[in-house]
Length: 308
Image: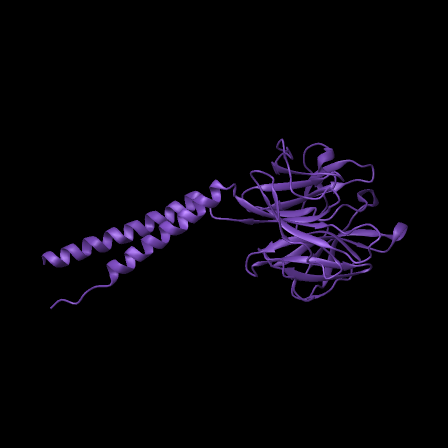
């Protein structure tokens, strides 16, 4: 009596699981999920309230609809500058309370971790996690008022210790949060000059690296947060009363027409965005084809065994 092989059953199970995953992804695509999940942090603290309230949610990159995930992730402080670390499956964020800034992590459900460490800077205006060297790159400030100094720095995500790479000119002033994003190996920045001009450019990853402008001045780059899902560079612009989502050509700085973000309070103040890549339909189809080939091969092997 021949032993029964479980390979065909395993192959059929793999095919079924592959088909189910593709169906789920197809349904997600049909409901507006595009190439990225764009997460957003916003300050929604009411006037005359000292305890900060930070809203956390996700933008549909096709429709611009904002969906709240957590009404408040702040623990009373100002949480901002999200940048995604796929290995940790969480965002690095900063928690700021007056002159003290700590480094934390925030998962996609809105759960904030305890402090990793305290930064030397008293203000952070953008962070980007670089998988190539497992480091954070940030725009920091030290001092108060006219004594403020701004710098481009590297932060150790394990300790929150930072090293200044470049001291920035006074003309840069204090930008809004979330100005950095690493996209396909380059760190891009949106800048707000003291003159009010909005600019887009890049930095290198070494000491002494200076800002290199790309394209022309554009007011939409003022008060803009950047995020990349690995294939597309996104920008969210906050004009003080509304928000708009753009895609950016990193080579030229050209912006798409932009779509209005709906579902957020006009009283919100943007504290940064972060994007997570999600499987494309093509990736799903490759997985399904592979499972189908495995099932077909197993069936052929079984038929040959029965004829032998």
